[in-house]
Structures are given as C-alpha cells and as structure tokens.
Length: 348
Image 1 (cartoon, rainbow, N blue to C red):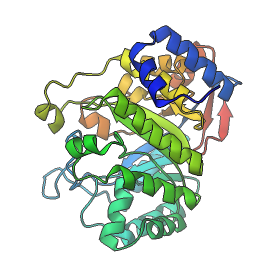
Image 2: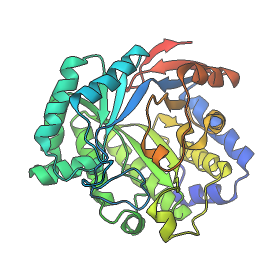
Image 3: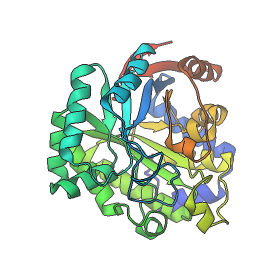
Image 4: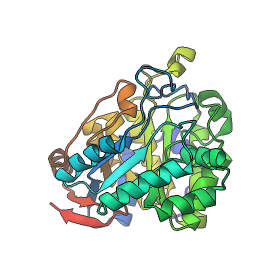
C-alpha cells in the first residue's frame, strides 16, 4: 500500500463517504491485527495535583495554588488508590497532574521510588511532555537528565498528553503558556532514545483546520519513522463545558460522532507505522467506542477506574472490564487484557 499523503488524507476527511472509510480502515486494521484481537488495559488515572500555572483555555480541571479545592495528593491517598486498583486486577497507573510551579525533580523521584518499592507489579505510565518540560526548567536540567533520573526511579513510559494540535498557530491561542510543537516532539524523541516508549495523542475540535489536523499526524509519523517509540495513537474531541475556551470562542461547535469516526478511520490509514489505534470511549461514550472498532481502532484503552480531567468538562462516561468484554464480543472480535507494552495478559 502506498503511504497516504497529507493531501490525500485531507481529501478523505472532507469527501469520502463514512461507510467507505470504515471499510478502508477495517481492511488496514486486519492487515496489522489479523487475529481479530481487541485489547484493553485495567488501570487508574491518578492526578497527583490539580494545581497548574499553564492556564490552558480548554481545561476545566486545573486550579491555582490558593484555590480552596486545590490539592497535592499525599502518599497515603495515592497508596489507597493503587490498593483499590490492585483489588480489581489492575496493572498500570496513568500518573499525571497539573504543572505545579513548586515541584522539582527530587519530589518526583521520591514519589516514584515510593510507588515502585511498595507496588512492584504496577507499571507507571506517567508525566506528559509539559510536565517533563517544566521539571527540567525548574530543576535546571535537560530533558535527558530528567528522563534518566525518573526512569531510574521507576518511570516505565510516558503518555502523549499535551499534544492537543501540534501547530503553534493553534497552540498560541488555546494554550499560550504550554510548550511549543518542537519541544513536545523533543521530549518524546529524547524518551525514545532512552528506551522509554510513549503514546501520541491529539485533541481536535477547537479552532484547527483539517489541514492542521493532518500536519499534526505528519509530525508524529515522521518521528515514529525515526525512533519507533510510539506504541499507540489516541485522539479525542474537545469537551467544552466549564472551559474558558468556549467562552472566548462561543461559535465552536460540538464534534459529532460522524466526525470522530471519520477522523479515526483516516488516522488508521495514515499511521502505517503505528501498530495500535486506541478508541476514546471516555469522550465518545461506550457505543461509539464500540463502533470505533469498525473504523480502525484495535484497542479500547483503559477501564479507567478514575478519571478527573474529562469529567471536569462535564463528560462522565464509564465502563468496567465485563462491559468492555461484552462490547468487543458483540462485534465478533476477541477481547484480551493487556499491559502497558501491549503484551497480552489474559484472553476472554
């Protein structure tokens, strides 16, 4: 198959009938996953703090340090969350927080060491590029130095959060304090060079164009050609409730399920070098999450014992392991529980 060009990808997004996109994406998915296995991971999001100075207009989760509901979790609170995860057979924590202005590298090292020592079976998938960038700046270290030190204390992989749209014209409006495109890519390239795998993400549905969506994909695909370090690609739509961005741009339209499935299918066709495409049922709901498996997704992501960021924007979808298994079986695919590295742990 000839690699999909940016021009062709934009054309597919704009003009291709949805059913045809489903057929094309399914064909590509079957080439990459011929056994028809759909995976999921049992994990928990732990947002260790909601204090953040970055003030992204699209975020309803963050708080200032003096707000009455601002917090930094204690070790006991974190331990309690991990204990609950272990009770349901969880294997991973997605560990992220706001960009706290006072926390330096030693704080993160101590926390990772605590978790790794007390919970050796738990994989720590944590700290987005913006967190790594700020830890480096406030601690006067390079990205490489930060990542080496965190890896030595137990960090296994990093999530793709903070990408939004990898176009600085968009970023300068929706998140002007956040690191730029070049630095987001640099964090991930540095991590990959150290053997730390990551995921790539995209949040669409604010002020970007179709062309900027595809240019984002182009940057991710080019880095993947270079490093091979992305395990999966995950995209989701902007959730506007309670955000400053919708107040500033009230004409922003809610993204339809058609739009999500259309973009997902073209992403599956575009990313010929990324094995896994994850469904965003958290923003789309469980049944569109199921339908996404017919539009190129091969992974339902996390059972998500806890989710705070999307919930802050007014979306509270939930799904447990048994529901995931049923949805996967309903469309004739084979459910399997995986770990962070996409190794199959159990089939159902």
